[in-house]
Amino acid sequence: MTQAVVGDPGERVPGRWWTVRLDAVGRGGTAVRVTCSRPACAEQRLPSTAAGRAAAVAHLKAHLRAVPAPRAEAYCACRAESCRAHLPDTTGRPARTEPWRCGGPVVLAVLADREGRWWQAMECCSRCAAATPGAKTVGASRTPAPRTAGHPAPATTGVGVPQFSDHQAPAGTAAPAPTPRSVPARRRPRQGKIAQRVVPHDLLPDTLRDELIELGDLFRAYQRREQPDLALLADLQERKARAFTAWAGVTGDDDLREEARRAEQAAATIRRQHQQRTGGVTDGDGPAVTRLLTAPTQWEYARSVLAHVADHAPLPGPEARLLALMLTLRTAHTGTGNLVGQDVNALNLTDPRDLVEKLTGCGWLSLPGTVDDLLASRPENPTPITVPSLVPPEDGTGPFTFGRKMRPKLSGWAQRVVTDKKLRKTKATAGPRLLALTLATRTDASGRLGPGGQGIALDTLTTRVPVGPDGLQDLIDRLTAADWLTDTTLTDTHLTGRLTERVLPLTCPLL
Image (cartoon, rainbow, N blue to C red; front, side, top):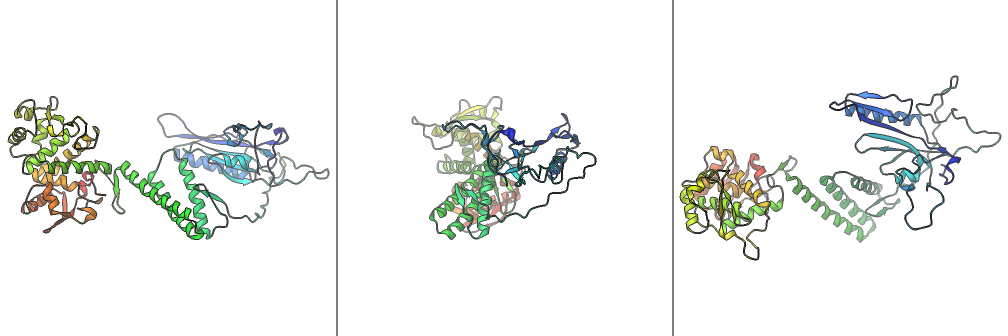
């Protein structure tokens, strides 16, 4: 192979460069056109983008087949445009006299747009090809025969000379014969890098070396992505952890073992971030569940509100507990909020007027007017309410740690649970609705009750839902009839079972 020589470009042949483009024909349609920068290539029109991309790739491959090898006497087609090797030297060293810094054999490089809008091929030196992001080398030049008086230079259209598709041989000239392929020289295994480490070319076994080199390429390709893919990144980190563990086992290098441990931690962290962003937690091979509350921190906030109301219930009984919980969610951030009559009436309480009067009578709730005014208020004119125990003291610290924007999310989640259409259809009372809220926060990712699906202790349930063991079975039956629960078993100590797939989006899984 001939090395690209730095010198006057006039002494050499300019490198060839051509582009195949894919563009829309017009607005409002799906038709596209494929054009090529070579003059002899006619425009093609296709009915869809997929068909256009296939035609563009096929056209580019046809050009590559017409050019068996790049010319050794060519200099870089990229010149000084978008080429890292040709950028000005900013290191402070004396300015170079030559306008470019090329090196290595002349190669044929192929570039493609990430969005599939254009494809390019060019003759350039191997250094420029390596410095161009996304470039792939599809061929390299061979050393030309020396020119002597008895052996003049070959003609431009002779046997073995590469031809572009728009270059036609003169009449009477035989078609160029294919250039015989030379037997490639034996090369040592490709050397790669991963995590700023060079993968030794003699690393054994070969499968480990190939895995490390491939992982390095995949990580670099991921860094060039326009949009992150956390699931893909987590998979790469897990593969890296396994590969580095094997590498450490071969070499005995403790630094590699530490790098494997960091990769394992990174994979776990990235998977949690992916779950928090998507709100999806998969159950085995099943699809991800998109939850109303999307992040584990939000699930913990919901549990903290239920625990607070259970510890600070102003009145006994499930109806008072349910109403206090809903009012707490309305006023959790500042101790104040707005309420309308429908918010109270939708809970199907036995006597909502009497219950609200009891809450105001004991000082737990404060209203600007009468209870009748509250129950008659409408969304266009809500009633302001205050829960004095939730008003932050002077130091600003309240019973909850979530912020102002989180409060309506939690309140909306609880409202969706207690006003579930099947609970309304079965005219569920406060007990089943309160139990539904409790169970929604005490499942695993697949909806099985309790940590790891082992069930919920009865003392935990009776703390959250103020009923006796006999009354608990009735509430379970009502939720089963409302398509909330299935496969339940109530023992002297635990409740086991699972929530139905219908209500999984309302759950807050235990991690």
